[in-house]
Amino acid sequence: MAQRFDMDLVEVAPSESPPVCRIMDFGKFKFDTAQKAKESRRKSATLGVKEMKYRPKIGLGDFGTKTRRIGEFLSEGHRVKVTVMFRGRETDHPEIGTKILDKIAQEVEDIAKVEMAPRQEGRNMTMLLVPNKKGRDAGLMVSLDPGAAG
Image 1 (cartoon, rainbow, N blue to C red):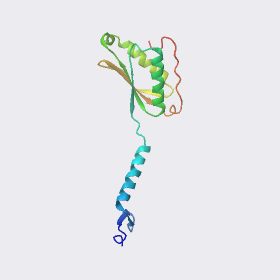
Image 2: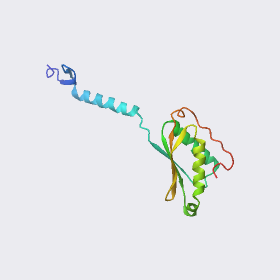
Image 3: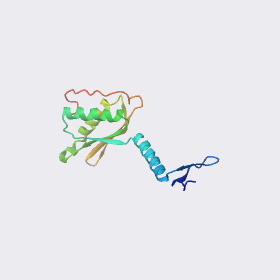
Image 4: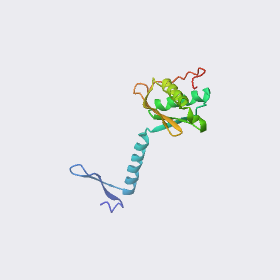
């Protein structure tokens, strides 16, 4: 009967008893199922790790902007890896990087918690922040007082 209409006999629900079959164009059926799968993958956004990089001599304006951006990432549900990059003689003063990372943790403490404490890895010092469940909906207000970033 399917051949007469130049169509295919497609098994739609093989797990049912008896199995459900339909007379349709199999190519179109495959295309539609692929489109539905693609759409469902698009809707289920995968939340990954975002990274924000700082320098020891960062200015107050840049510090505030980057820290606000970290707050946005956290409120979207992303984890954030914060990196302080040292160059040359800056590696001799890791306390500057620790001070910057502590200030960031203090600024976002209402919406995030520190999963991995600051630690030195070669020329970089890193810290990992994860969003709080209650803090996801809250915003982030960064205070820009003098001496905040070091």
